Length: 102
Image 1 (spheres, helix red, strand yellow):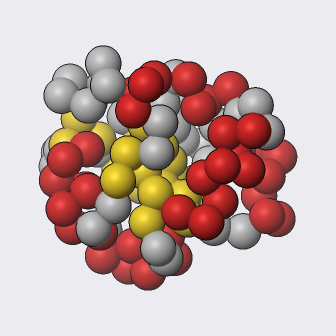
Image 2 (cartoon, one colour):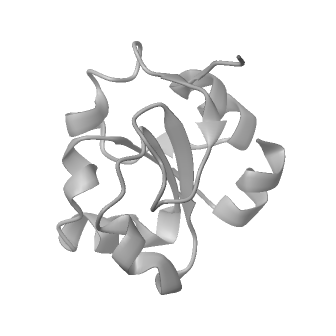
């Protein structure tokens, strides 16, 4: 089974942690194992949010890492997404292109 750390993901897709005040405890311990949809993701999974069509899934995701567009960061934080305080949100310029890199 392949495992990847948050810092490895950040380097691969040139991204920043969007919610460091909540995610800092997870940054060194979290080992991610697979890509998953927002709806199906668990605590060791990476999910992507790059379409408003999936807002309802974002509200219920349990993903360990959610990769989002930098431009959406403030709106996601303001929306009160429960995972914002429980998961690591990584922001990058183009999350759909980041998906191809992972």
